[in-house]
Every structure is written in C-alpha cells, then in structure tokens.
Length: 424
Image 1 (cartoon, rainbow, N blue to C red):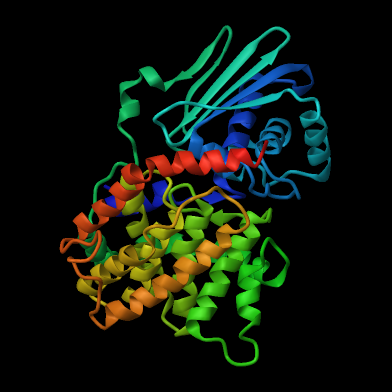
Image 2: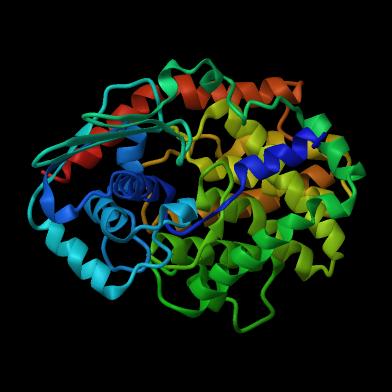
C-alpha cells in the first residue's frame, strides 16, 4: 500500500507550462477539439463562464511562448494547437504559426466571457456552437478535472451524478507532526522522484536570471549584490523570484507545481534547494526538505482550497521555511515556530490576479521564510496571545484558513471590481 504522504506528493505535484488558470482553459479547449473533432473554422460562437478566481488569475498573465496575455489567446491556442495528452503542459509545443492562427481567430470576435456565480473557486464552463452542433465542457476543483463533457447528441462525461466524484483523491488527512515523522523515517528511494522538481525549477530560475522577463525582480536583486559575495537570503530570494519572473512573463519552460500552481511549486522548492546547495547539504537531506516543504504546503492548501483571496505563495513559503529549518537540524518545535512566525507575519497578502508582479510577492515571502527560520532555530516565535496565533499549531493553521476562506470573501469581490473597472 502506498504511503499516504507519497500519494499526496504525487497527487499534488505535476509539471505545467504557464500560469495554470489560463492553461486550464486551454486544456479544456484542447479536450473539446480532440473528443469531438471540432473544426475551428466552423465555429459560430464560444461562451466561457469562469469563476471569479479563475477570471482574476487568467485576465492579465503572460501566455507561454507568446508575448500575449489573457483569456482569449489561451483558449484559442488550446483549441487550435493544444496537446491535451500533456495535461497542464498543453501549450508546450505551440509554434509561431499557431500563434498567428489563434490571433486571427480571436479577431473574429466569437469568444464571449462571463463571470459564473458559483461557490466553486475553480470553475470553467466552455460552450462551443457550430453550424450543426453544440458542445459543452465543465472543469471544477482541479485544473484538469473534467466533470461534464457533452455534445447535443452525446454525453461523454457526467461526474455530477457520480457518487464517486465526492471521494476526492486529494482529501488525504495529515498533520504537521505526521509530516515531520514521515520525513525523518521514509526511505530516500521513495522520494527520489522529487529530483524532477529540482531540475525543472532550477532551469526556469536560471532562465529568469539570465534573460529579461517581467519586472526582472530576481535579476535585479542578484545584480545589486555583485560587488561582494551574495548573502544567502539575497541568493535564495533572487533565484526564487527569477523563476517567477520567467514563468509569469511567458517563458515556455515547465515548472513543477504544488496544488495546481506553478508559483507555489517554485516557492515550495527553490528556497529550500538553493539554501541547501549554498550550505552544501547532501542531496538526500535536500530531497527530504523538499518533501517536507511540499507536504506542509499541501496540508494547508487542502484546507484553503486551490484558489482564494489569500495569495498562495504565503502557503508555499510556510513550507519552504519548514524545509530550511529541517536542513539546519531543527526539531518539530522549531518547525511549529517557523509556521507561527510566517502566519504572524505575511498572512494578509492578497491575491489580485496572476501577473508579472507576482515575482515581487514571491521575493517578499521568500525573505520572510528565511527570517522565520532564523527565529525558529533560536526557539523564538510569535506567541499565542498575539493576533491569530494559537498555542496549538493546527489551530493556528485553521485560523489562517478561516481568514483566507471566510474573512477575505468580500475582499475577492472588491479586487475583481477594481480590476474590471480598469478594463472599461
């Protein structure tokens, strides 16, 4: 029987090229074309209904392999050239001609976009009308989780009426203590598959550092330290945010995601990887620390949900802080202290959509992760009489989740209204 923590890692970590919300739209479009052999030249109208959070994250982010942003180009590329077999790497193989064809298709003004009123944070509904048929697809909860797929005459998928749909594969319960015990005892061979996250995420980090993407946050931080040996905090911050620069700026390299997010995958892994390499920790210890970081983030994201008004890299950096504490020989108390320090510090950062400046937030939380680690290893943490911190670590986590899911519900709506007002 597969260890539940191994299963969690395999369920919630996968490669993706580009921001996963527009990529999920592209994936849905590619599935429709593949399953029903749709000829895009015969399409009359397209209707996209998106949850608030999907719309917010897909509106202004760079689409990989192009210098374009937004929802229509993501859909068109998926419909015309996407490879659905590659899941969230659906646009990995697009060519220049595909971009030109997709741009021309967009100019025909057949794509209509609306906000769907739904309790689902991750919801995408696509309706495609041709001269003689109507096709429909719905994605919910996970970026590749198709719950409905049909044409006027055929229903291929209808999980809404399937009782098994309620048994979500990611609902595997754990705790910080269980995760810590797992990391200390698991055979290294069982987690060697995490080496892929090192190679993928380091490659896009180097791409962001060596080229000009977005705000060039990582490149700027790194270059400002060139007159002297770069300190470890600036090093891990620059290398991590450089990966986000590249990813949000349209780089066509894949990243290893965490809970469906590339920026979260970057932030759970790269601070730990570069911290470990800076201090020459063994590959085994780095792999264990990456596993710890990702599992802590998964534990929190299972409670919070894939998308929220709370910036997801906060959760990832909490994991990264724990991973660095582990590398430095910290025990479970030090791990708990790091989590409390992070929650007591950066818990109010909002998600105002996916975009180039996400790299700034990645830089901020990476620095916070390092600072929280330093305090935790000195047995210092935000006390339970302060703010939303509780003596019990799981209650502290639940307080953060309540803030993100309940307290910031109206914040999400206000953010969207502000973003929409700029589009008029």
